[in-house]
Length: 349
Image 1 (cartoon, one colour):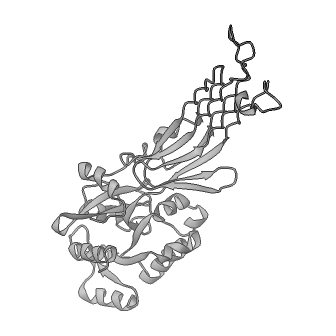
Image 2 (image 1 turned 90 degrees about the horizontal axis):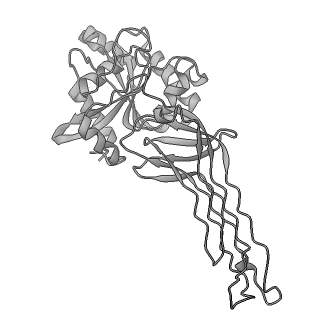
């Protein structure tokens, strides 16, 4: 089993099926976060029956509550945040006499799926990404509590009557984006056969029909391999020319491709120009993020049960400089050989 995200597999081991319902899958949310203000320090002076001039004993204020984001390997969508647009942490309590500190404000923890990226909504600045189960990051830090007057006592000022106010917390709009974690990402135009392949090699049950954009949300399947090994394959909505500009499902599709270890390009056998279709797909990835071309990639000609040996030889000659093979998910042709090839790419010796 590939170790790049082992916690991800723990969940898969139970379900063997990761098909996402379209109305439940949310991969982008914008939320307003506000951490808590720090509590004020106390200016209390000690006054007891036999200690008329006891000096300062004001305690510090408590810190404001933080807003955290924590990875949860059992989650696969940001749906729970769609209707929770505002997240507020608690304020810190004020200090009091006898050196008593104020209580810290209540922290808020937002649980998210692995593969979630946080950005500042105003500037677009990348903040962090969550890739491990239990990994925790600050989304907004609470303000520090103010110091009580005991900190300001000196030889020349035995009874300071002032203390620090607490610091204000942070607030602002944040964007959370989910990028699917998978070993193999399927890249192809709509109706290239991606969903059919996933349904054949795994227990996932994506919607399948012969018209564009049948797949509207990512589907994940765990693919069993030899000797009880496995890898995760993602069927992501079909790309179209101009996707990098947001056309079709555009940017939503391309965001998920970023997190795949390797890319499996699919061009159907009945394409008018296999090389041209492959190059269009490459071009869309490059325009969106040139680093995507650094990933391992492999081309399969799908629906190959339509081809006789002579046509296969002609297509192979046309693609002689591109590593490729022929498959038919429906006829179960070339599927085991494809699994072998994927495993070799994912686990180079």
